[in-house]
Length: 225
Image (cartoon, rainbow, N blue to C red; front, side, top):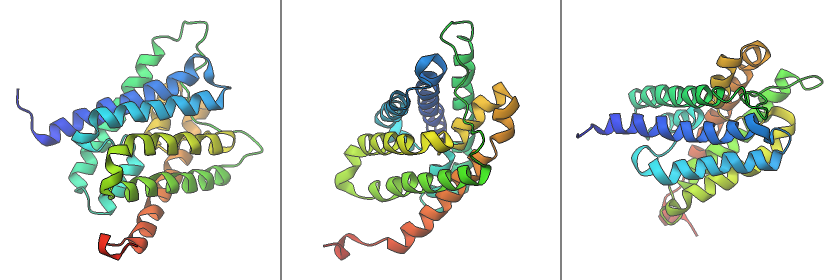
């Protein structure tokens, strides 16, 4: 059956986001919640799997912050952005729903929702999420335009994501991805749902700033040394 490119991109983003959230938040849900290195490695691995399996179809955004940056940088239409956003949301929600099936297991500790507690405040989390998302998105914008780096994008993004989680985990829970936080929050409710707005505002601000900075520094190959 021949599918249009947009439908294939939708399915690719759905699957890729499912993998990222399933592997990443699954590591928290079933025992690695206190092991930040393990969680960071799990998210990096999820991104690596997704990028090398569906990156050639959709670019493997897996994150509304990345898709927003691509739309703002005019690499995709706003119609595509809407399709990607829906696919990412449904993929993340399906991943969290699947993890919920294991809620009776002794090792289950929750769905890995993002959250923070006093003395950390919402503004501190927004600032951390903004700057860490800025780094992630700028890395994607810049590296994806360098032809020699394109075969390495999976490793570049995975290592960047892993490093940023190790930095931001103790402060902000290290989301950098509104959908990764929204899906488990919708199913868990309570504090996770009341705090999820922070994990939307911070990453989207970071994404927008990354595009502005990228366009200021953007150059042609002939201009490089």
